[in-house]
Length: 190
Image (cartoon, rainbow, N blue to C red):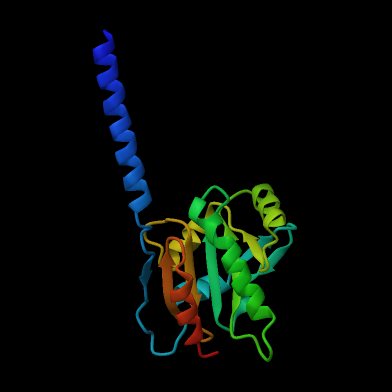
């Protein structure tokens, strides 16, 4: 290969590098997929009943009944330490939970996280980031639990907003848009 060919290859490679950089800078993050489930006329969704019938270990290895969250709106976030969008949204989700806990008067909703990961990874991550809401170990069974609540694709992060009446109000697949989430939470009846 002579110097002319090498220079041409370098120029083409540089051009593709610049074009790739421009595309990356202008790339918009996809909006989360949001859905609502059919109204059941005031009865709890059967998937929510199954959810509340579960017990999951907390990060200390102690079993916790999810039924303890019944009767008040609940934001359930399915996540994993290896999921970049999950990790990116957790500090803001933690701030939201902390804000709600510090509210004057009665809390409007609770936030919990269900990790699709090993207990060790979840504990180390939560300790490092100082997450302000309860985290539970879902393991691989957590994926099935999220599917039952509407996560047909099985993707992460997946967040479910459950009303005090056991109705699934909305689901969010992908990184949360907090302005949309805050608007949804502001409309809660609880």
